Length: 165
Image (cartoon, rainbow, N blue to C red; front, side, top):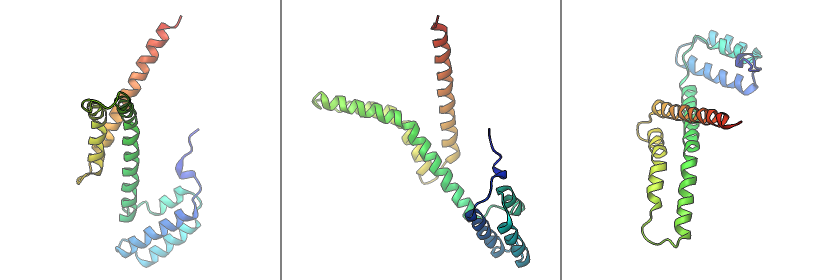
């Protein structure tokens, strides 16, 4: 059962955060001091997140909130990239272990496995953390990978069901 986020009860830190956001809007000239005082009073009386959202519905997102949202989104994408790369990291580590167990003779052949398995993750990390972050491109790429993985799982499950008596 999914709960509507706007009906959840608001915490004190959420009220404080909204009051700070309203201060920034007042300082930017979007609110008069009277409007600011009225809205802050309503914020401290609010009991749900929906009531807090209603207080700022006609205001643009504050720069501090926008910055915090970008940091949160980038952190989430970084976590997803690392999660997607975990299989390649594991395979690469196994290949390095095999190379070491075989006496580490000859060229370092696991580099080809490392490059093949981790290149997509390295590209996504550079896109995410590089000089011009491309969060939408990384998010799109990760979503496409997830869609392909789910489609493969469904195909395998169908084949498995066909094989069962």
